[in-house]
Image (tube, rainbow, N blue to C red; front, top):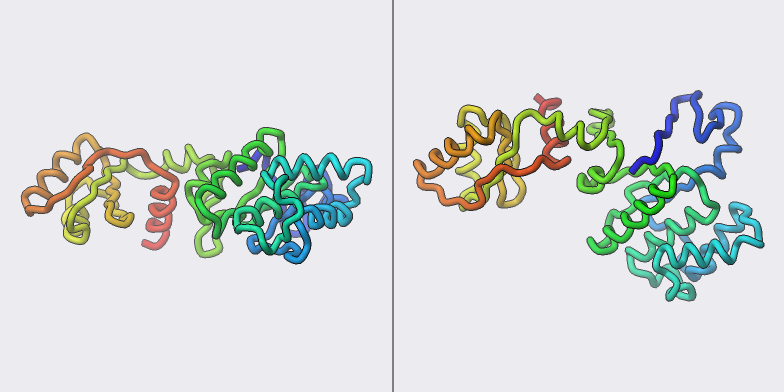
Length: 260
């Protein structure tokens, strides 16, 4: 989720209005970085970790108490301030790491796969927190393997094999997908995949568990043809319908075009 754009180039460029080459030290207080792996001090309590990072970033003593209490409430950790970080759940550890990252109130956040390994509820709560930060004007640069998270962002850069494939808004990336999306759940997905892939107007077939996602030139025209082909071969299925395109379908389609 990007509230703005962060431009960094080799040996040149600016971050938060400061030159990378000549003002590197001035940039550091403007950035908060959260690593993918939990890297705080497990033997310290939630409160002790926050105070430690406040000292690292020279948070004024007169502002420390208010900032800590606000971040504890913001991250839902007020009732756990005395608990050791090592004894927190994975989701709580992520929230504590974010709170420590925010203690010096940086205008730019760099988050490296911040929700990897946490449960779905904690992942949603974490993104609710990021949304509030975004609405408050914080620029957030997130790396994530989850396409539904990428879809929440204002601008997305999709990478494959170390290369930037596309960088645009989620809406434009999805709109750039060739064709329309048809979804079905066949009893024999392997046979259905083989049949569907040979039909005219079917541009691409993607598998999602028991579901098949077909990219077609026209959903209205191809739906009855797909249905007729499956019935002709005696294949049972359910849920044959046109479906909205997600970021995941767009990303997979882009990768397949590169690999051809």
